[in-house]
Every structure is written in C-alpha cells, then in structure tokens.
Picture (cartoon, rainbow, N blue to C red):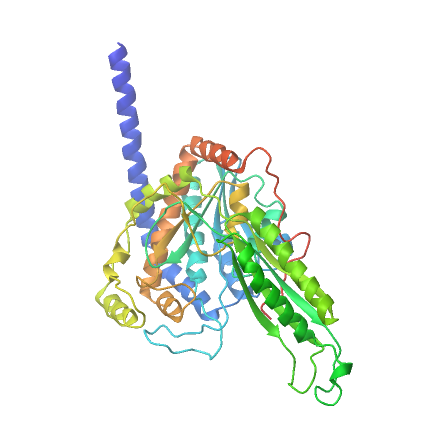
Length: 476
C-alpha cells in the first residue's frame, strides 16, 4: 500500500511537471506571436530617445499598453512624473518586473553598421532601455493573461522606472516605500550575450561641487579676483592625491562642468561633477566624505565659497542565487537569438568596427551558470531594490557579440531585428520565471530568507540621496 501511495505521488509530480512545461510552451508561443507588436513599441521608444526624467512619451506609451490589458495604473509615483506602477491581481505573492526606458545623451545613431548620427550630439538608446521597458511590459501582460485564465492568486506589477542613467529613479521609488510589500523582483538588461548569473555591482554616490569667487580682469586687476576655477582645480588635485589612500577597488571620476567664460576674466563660478564608487556602500559613504573635505579645504585655500548637491546615490547589487538559478533554467528553455542572413550581414560589419576576437554565433548561446557572483564594473539603481526585495536579473543578446554598452554600435543594433529578437528572449524568460514563483510561493520564501542572511540582522536601509527630491532637470 505504501509503495502504491509513493508511486501515485511520483506520477502526480510528473504529471504536474509535464503540464507546467506545456503551459510554458504556450506562453512562449503567445509571446512570440506578438513580436511585431512589441517590436513596434520598442522601435517607437528608440526613435523618441528621451533622456532621464524627460521620458514623457515613452512612459505614456508603456502605461497605455498596460492599461489596455486591464492593469491598474499609478502614474507620477515617488514625485517623478514619468514613473509608474501598473498592477493586476490581489494578495500574495507580489511579483514585480522592472521596466526602464531612458536614453543617453550624445550617442544619436541610425540603425546602420557604421557611425551615422541622426542628430549630431543628440540622444540615443545606447543602453537598450527601449528594449528593456518593452520586454518587461510584454512579460507582465502575458503573466496577467495567464493569471486571469487560471484564476491564479497573487499580484503582478510592472514598475516603470525612469532615469536609471545617472538619475537613480529607483532609489526614490524604494525610499517612497513602493517595494515594501513585494516578494520578488525580476529584471533584465540588454547585452551582447545571454546569461542569468547572479552578480554584484558597485555602490555609487555622485555630487556637483560648486565654487563661488569674485570676477575681475585677469591681467589688469587679478588681485581683486578670487578664482572659483582655482577652487575646482585645488579640489581635483587633493582628490587625485587621495586615490593612494582608498581601497584599491575604489573608482573616482570627475568632469569640470563649468570653468569660466573667458581666459581674461577671473572665474566667479566653477563646477565639478564627481562620482565615487566602491563594491561596498559603507566604503562609498566614507570615501565620499573625504571628497567633501577636499572640497572644503580647496575653498578655504582659494578664499572661495563652496556648496554641493547630491545628484544620486546607489547601493551595490545584492545577488540572489535562489531566483537566479530559477531564471537561468527558464533562459535555457527559451534559448538564445537566431540570426537571419540579414542579421549576419549587419553583424559582420559591426564586428569590423571594434577590436577583439568575437563570434556572432555567441548570440545563440546561453552562458554557463556560475554560483560565484561576478563583480560588475558599473553601478545600477537596481542595487537599492535588491537590498529591500529578493532580486534577480538576466542579460539577453540584443547587441552583436563584443559590443559595449553606451556605444553607437549598441544604438544601431537596438534599432534592428537583432535588438528585437534579444528583447523577446528576455520577455519570455521573465514571464516563465514569474509563473514559476506564482505556482510555488515557497520559492519567494526561500529567496527572502537568503536576502535576510546576506543583509544581516543589523541592516537598516538609508538612501544615499538623503532627503533630496528627484533631480528632474539633471539632463537639461
């Protein structure tokens, strides 16, 4: 009798597994069938190429797409006009999918495999966020349809998150408590390969330091002047000496955004924009204060006045292996990107524009999984989300293998079928992963326990931006 009962349980489990795979196949087929529609949305956002906090049309298009499917929309959340939360369902678990849609300044590019700006110095989607936002919306809609047809308990949300590129939009959304009741967060990012490995990122804090002096004739009466530019240069010199005395993983970058108007006028105003990065948020806080002290000393030594404005601050990304392993299995099921002959011809020309031994066939492969999280060289505002909610992400081959983000090559591929095909890989993978969590809420519970262990008992979230309002004009 016991053997019969055990056999019955095994058969039930196998039957359930087969049914789950058939459901996943249906979801994949359904999303594939909408490639043209979602491709049109992505290419429209690619054409608009709206920079951070100015993504009015892009945000509206994604909201309208979700509203037509029956999502409840909250617009202008966290005091950000282009941020939104779209929701369907009720109760737990609550699964969130992140959607970005901001472009970068200065990388305008036609969808051709040679440098050809649409508008000289204009913006472009060099990080592929037009694909990011659209794929996330596609995944959210397909999960909503599945939940509706199966009467599945729970809530699916799509978070429209503006200004990832330097504006830190998600930080304000976290600070506003918009993720407090979420059980799992899924996201993705355009890439030149397909993978779903857990990873770290660098914590980051930025500020604009402004020096105020006194203008005078630089030749006739220099003794009457106090050079704000001297203050900036003195600060930069001290920070450059500081580099010897910070942890070696630290990165400090700056640009002088205003240095005066004419050489024969002692500058009355000057400004320098700083980024401070480190793998640990605690180190960033400490190093940033040293940079502030350098600015104070520079002002004192040059007899100028100084103030500074925090622009953004990001936590380092916390990996979640529970969710990453699940996402990887679904990515394996979905598979990589298959190039057409036209795609191959485009890719072949792109490969001639940068050095390195890259194979376009890698776009069709899934990178091996590793449970040893890798440290990324960049920063992301997803980091703050990942300290509050278990978070997993993936990359899809929306660019020709070997392409770097923030390049014209990335903009070009993102405006072609290559970008759209990678986008659909992400949409399908996100949808399947969300379905798995809805079907087995114990996955979310395990992921939450992992997050709690990584954070430690003493952790209390404090946004690095303090109480500042979103810098809605930072790209103007």
